[in-house]
Length: 427
Image 1 (cartoon, rainbow, N blue to C red):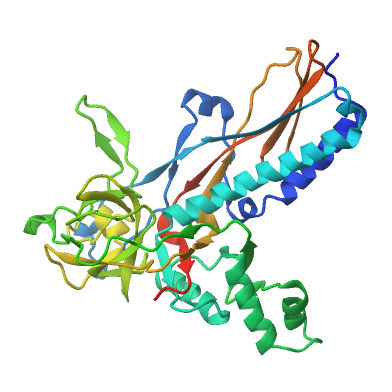
Image 2: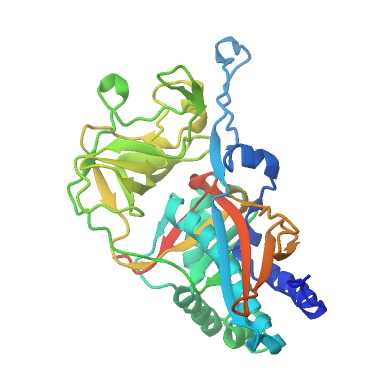
C-alpha cells in the first residue's frame, strides 16, 4: 500500500508507546476503570460509578427500629477527552527519517501531558479539602497538615499523594537539605544533588511543572448563607438521594457531589474559591465525630446573583434519614439564617493537589477507525489501557505526508471529600 508504514516507523512507534507510558505520571497515581467500549458507545460515553457505602452503627441488643434501607449513591463518569496532535511534512523532508521521529516524540510528550493535566485539573477544581498555609513552604510541617486533615476525616492511609508546584517543592527540598545536611546521608544527598523530596509524613510527593494558579478570592466579607434545618425554614441543608423523578415520571440518577445553594450575594465570587461556613464543622466520615475544624467547601460554579454550586453538599444529618446519617459531613455547632462565609484563598498562589488514590478514576477510551480506507493505522496500548493511535496518509496531488497521533480518555472525581489542594503564603 502507498501509505504503508516502514519497518523503521513500526519500531519507532513501539518505542514511543513505552515513552508514552513512562510520561503518564499522575495517571499512574489514580485508579483506572477499563470499560466495555461497545456499551460506552451506546450510552454516549457516560457510565455511573458507585460511591462507597458508609455504614452507621447503633448501641444495644434490640435493633428493631434501626433496620433501614441504605442509599447507594453514584457518580457520572464520562470518556470526554479526545486529544490529537496532527502534523504534516513533504516528500523532501521525509527523506530524513529522524524528522518524523522527532515530531512523533513531541506528539507523545504532548498527549501524555494532556492526560496528566486532566487528572490535575479534576483534583484542583473539584477537590474540597483545603489546607491553608500562611507562610512559604518549609517541609515536614506542611505535609503533616495534609496528613492530619486526611486522618481526622477517616480517609484511607493507602495511596496518599501530594503534587507540588516546582517552587513549593523546591522550597521544601531546600529546608530538607539544610536541616539534614550530611553528604553520607542518602536523604540529604538526594535533596541537595537531585532536588528530591520523596515520601514525607506517610504521603508520596511529586513535582509539577504545570501547577495551576488561583487568584485571591474577591467575594469580600459580609457574605452569608442560611444553615437552618428545613423544619426551621432553612433552604440549604442537603438530603442525599440516589435517584430523582422527572415531571414525565422517568427516574434518573442523581450526582450528589454538588449542591446549588442560595447565599446573600455572589458578587465577585469565582469558581475554585475555597471557604468555610460559621458553625459547620467537618466530621469523621465513618464515626461522624466532629474534627473541631470547620468544613471546607469549594465553589464549582456561580449560577446567579444569589446562587452558586458548591461541593461538598451541606449534609448535617438533622433530618434523621439513613442517607443523611450515612453521608453526613458536617456537625453543626450553630445554625442561623445568616451564617458567615469566610474565604480561604486570600492571596494568589499555586494550587498544590493532594488525593487518595481511589478517589480519582480515569477511564481509557478506544478510537475505532476503519481499515482499508487508504489511511495506514498503527495502534498500541499501555499497561493501564491507554490507547495510542497513529495515522498516516499521502496526498498524491501535493506530495504532503499527513500524520496524526490520537488518544481518548475520561477522568472522574469519585469522592471530592477525599482530595483537595494546599496553598502557601495565604495571609
